[in-house]
Length: 158
Length: 335
Image (tube, rainbow over all chains, first blue to last red):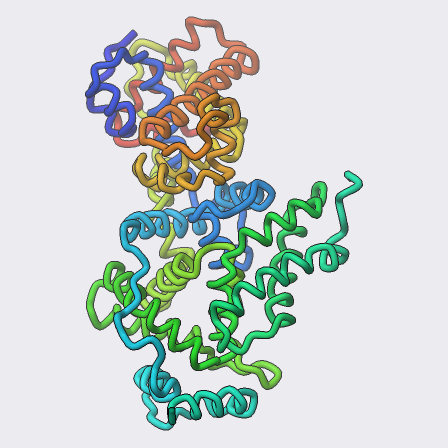
């Protein structure tokens, strides 16, 4: 059996880890891992069997990366991720992002418990985005929320 | 079909009490969001229908649907529904709870502060919704179902928006194209174009080609014979270059089905199902997958290609030699 150069192990970090720990390594392990590595990397976008409109939605992607799916939901999704390099790459990025912010607890800005004028706060927010100051973006639903707004208005008077 | 199994149209009366409990809890926490019980139930029902339709196999039992409902991030969903309706108090809560986080995620991903701010602004616009369909504004929030956390969903939305921003600044390169250039395309293009090398001294070139073709065919079949969760693990590790700790993070949730499939025969799972998944555990899962590939690989060479033990060694040696070259598959072309 030919002596396998150490440089081959760049393809398998795990194997490298084992070598560093001086574990006995079967040369066939190196061969098959290297073969798997090169084989998988050679798979192309041409092999992507998924049409653009069939990609996973944000809701599903999130639930998958958070491990919140039941086996019933996960099975077809995992099959999809095996076939769809696009969605797999998205999940990869989301997993990294999740880990990057893993230690960040939910932080709520230290402000008053309720705004004195909710509309004012929201209009400021939306005017920054839409570049308008008139709060027109909420105008269409004022009718629906008349009763609630009256309550808010009365609250603020108190 | 078990006696408890139902068609999805029938689940509603059976599960209404669970939905009522969820609504009561949400309403108590956020009485001013203006969400009615019917509104929440409508959203939950849509999500349950989707869950039931996910699998063409046996439909879930009532118990499974009830468990599913209990796992929904109800408070997050309540907030999202209220924001989708344009409830001002909900928007204020959302802004207080999540804007700073959105900005941090955007800064983490974007190249410049300006890009980060642009993305956050565009996400807010999308969340609020500017498109009107049948007289109703379409808010992005309406697509959130509560299956994952709202924060996780927002991260996904931010990521997509940033890709769109990047695409817009690169002459509309398609999202698929942009993503795929990051991943797998390069190797195959080299594989397809390279011609056979002329380095064979020890073995005749024709025999060499035969062994290489057999090797390629065997590795293809060995991989395709793996279960999907094993394939995905190998793809994440070798193609996406996820680190062991990143994969461990993916299966951190004790209820993760991916984790469950890998630990099916694990005694540790039975005794301590919520135990932490370490990098060494992921390594073991990888090694099991390699072992499975190796077993099928050898079996295929022996049975399908009728290769003896010595020839099998030659195949493995050829693969080993090729590993030293920049691209193994330049010598494994089947043409």
